[in-house]
Amino acid sequence: MIIKPLSGSIGAEVFDLDLNSLDGATLHMLEVAFNEHLVLCFREQDFSPAKLLSVSRAFASVGRSQHLLGMKGYPEIVPVVKEAGEISPTVFGGNWHTDSTFLSAPPSRTFLYAVDCPAVGGDTLFSNLYLAYESLSPGLQGLLEGVRAVHSSAGVYGEGSELDSQLENMKLRKDVGDALSALHPVIRVNPATGKFALWINPLFVSSFEAMSVEESQQILGYLNSIAVTPSYTCRVRWEKGTLVMWDNRCTQHCALSDYSGSRREMWRIEGEHEIPIPAVGQR
Ligand code: SIN
Image 1 (cartoon, rainbow, N blue to C red):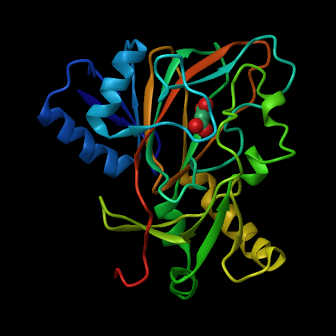
Image 2: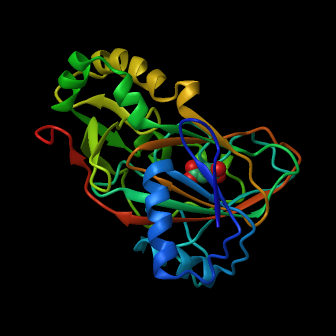
Image 3: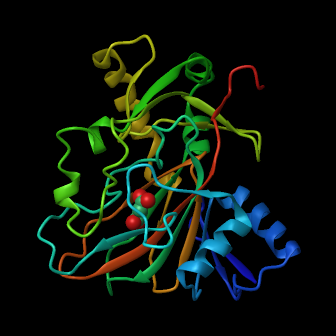
């Protein structure tokens, strides 16, 4: 197995490893690499839906997406599909975000497997939220440690959202009812590393607890720009058979909409749901 960093800040590619035959020692080495690089990109994998599920389960418990409909027979696997003939430029995950943070126990990991990719384009960007936290002054770090943010799915999946018609070949669940929301610490500890991350994202966070939206937006605008500082990011170029596993406790990501006229199909699984641990009192 060869592990090669994708940038100086986040992400690594893993070569010469068949995840279909994973032993305990290799799994341990991959967990160490995952905690170091936050995004692991396994090349040249060959999975059926059942195999993808069992490989994901080797790393983490897996669950169903709250708002997206899974595959028939595999409700945990959501097909993320954009057909070549689609009119809308909207792609799923096309804004900087961390997955499903509107849940009280959001997924710690996401698995995304490339079934069909454009020859060029359709890459995914990732950013390192530990570096974002570490770039803040001790004064601002301390100020934010006791603050919680309101995360909500209302803007994306709630009433009035146009996502259902924009994502022409994906299916939203109709059985979930109202938009979901949760309060989470702005500075989150990853229990696997003990490290602190600046844990906000522009897609699901609208305000801070006990502050108006207007007040919050000023501060969030600044923090959101820090979170995706170019030097804290990497870019994953997909190939058919690539599996990427990322850590939602300390990263954001953004899928690029630059492949109009080409087809892209991914299979996506959310795993290891856990309640975010606040940094306050953890020093
Ligand atoms: C996602 O945001 O979960 C999907 C990202 C992608 O399709 O690249």
